[in-house]
Length: 336
Image: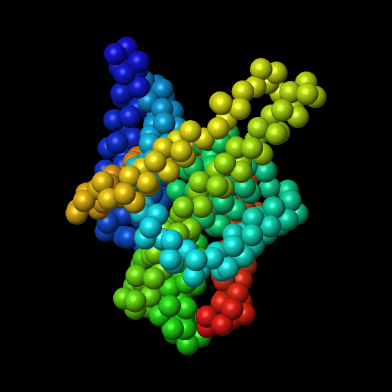
């Protein structure tokens, strides 16, 4: 009860910001509630400052609620639904993910961007935007500034993609399926994929959404891979005497990802009926907005500006390469 009293003010502050951000996101779906949540949080923290009694709760929301959000989103994902589409889009998905990670690593190293920031930009572009960043950030121990900067970068290009992908698709003469596969593999956030897909056609929108959900399942193996990479780095640091000596793999392992998988399996088994899935998805989205609002409340704008323009330029290059590779692989495999 004492712990609850300490964290409650920060949770409530994040909750009310999320309500406002969600409302604004519904008015302007191209931007979305998640971006509004981060922006409002940053404005409050850097202009008026968050109250001292909210610090603990804001920290709790940015970490624990973020993990709960990922689990809830898992409950809205049916593995059987994405199996068939996953096989059809497998080649394009593999190449676009590889492109995102390789580009983020090589270009990020050239620009001397911090490892965690370039990793989050790569993950966000490769998998599913803010959700993937939310899943990976606690595993690689990214701070609030890195999370806020990477999500802001990713969502910037989501907005651009929604505006330019449909006319480009028509200009290039894409079929509904070809455009759906392109949008589903080259646009990050689900809402942006849906917006771009349905702007092209209803069939393209339906296919793009399923391709996007297939990409979302890759949060599981990617999270496990990064947990092993982090564990290896921690072990090396301990051996060199520069890190935690009594490090434990259990502390790094992303247990919430296993609950994400369990939640997905429950949905696949048909335990959630009718409109329940829609309510679960809405809850998951709101929790994401709430957690990102808390991340905004923890972000120092001066620290963000220190990173400069290079991370945004990295985001441009990664996103462009993924979009181009998606088209090339479709052409090679005869899907265009």
